[in-house]
Image (cartoon, rainbow, N blue to C red; front, side, top):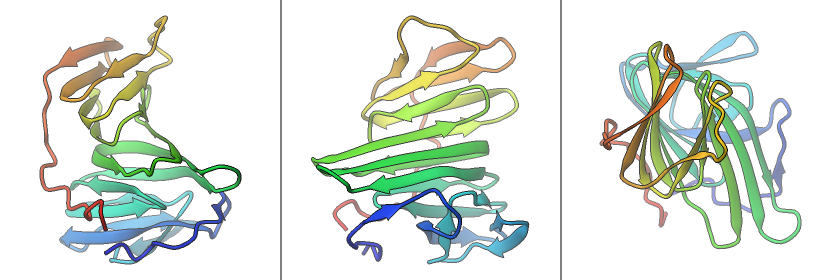
Length: 203
C-alpha cells in the first residue's frame, strides 16, 4: 500500500522539503543519489528532495513523487528532480513537476483524481515531453530521445523545431527526436520497460 497517503498542504521547491520517496531498488545495490555534494545509496523509503540527482547504475529503481506520480528507472539511467510543487489552495489540488532526463529510460505513470490538475514534464536535452496522459516511456541517448505513449497523450516540443501547433503523441504511438538532424519522426510503439514495478493505482 502507499505509505504516503496524507493531507497535502504544500511542497515548495526549497531545500530540505521531501517531495517523494524510493519505492523499490532491485539489482546490484549500487544505485545512489547526489545531494549537496554528498552521495546516498538508494534504499526503499529514502526521502527525495528537489535538486536530487539519481543514478541507477546496475539497479532498477521505482520512485514516487507526491502525491501520485510514479517513475520506473531502468539500469543506466540518470535523472534530476528539477522542481516539484504541490498546492491544494483553492478548488482542487494542483501538481507541477519537472524532471531532467540526463540519460537512460524512465516509465512514468500519473494517477489523478477528478479535481486534480497535474502538469508533469520531462526535459531530455533539446526536447521536452509534457504529460497530457497517464502512462508513457521516455529515453535519452547521444543519438536521440524517444517516446512511447500507452495511455493519454504527450505534447512534444523542441527549441530547434518551430511548428504552428504542438506535436501531440497519442496512445499506442511512438515518437523520436533525432539529435543530429534535429527532426521529429513518427514510429510504431515500442514497450521497453515491461516490468515497471509500479504500485497498484487503487492502493
